[in-house]
Length: 188
Image (tube, rainbow, N blue to C red; front, side, top):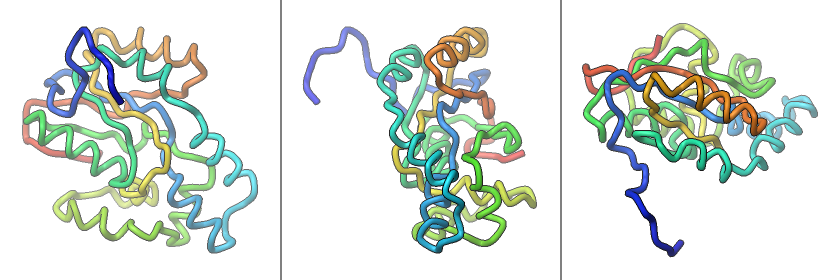
């Protein structure tokens, strides 16, 4: 990509205590696709996963252009990417598992032990991360194909940001918040 920017791009290292973490797409594409390969996924689950993957994020990125930190959620899974933002920014991120949107069927497949081929590698990147006893927690390490964006936005702007994203047809959600310490990721 070439071009000129009038301001610095949004990177990984700008998240601040008090920011809220916004996710723009549900997670679970790796698990759904692994379920498809194992012939365990229902047809509508695969269709919904493909529709999510096909949703472009250009308009969404435009709304999030004022975020303090942002990245796309891809191969390292949501936990890996959030941990990267936390460490690059020198802050803690408190993730609320119940608030994370997931694709239909992903939790059910995770409960059956369905994992993508790189799940174990992703989990090994954060061995110290304590997880609640919940099947949904496995999806934090699920690699995403064409996943959403995760952004740290100032708390006072989040309602407006979510409204704009929802007007675009994006099911964006606040999934956590940034804290001063300890540096790294914590899951509630």
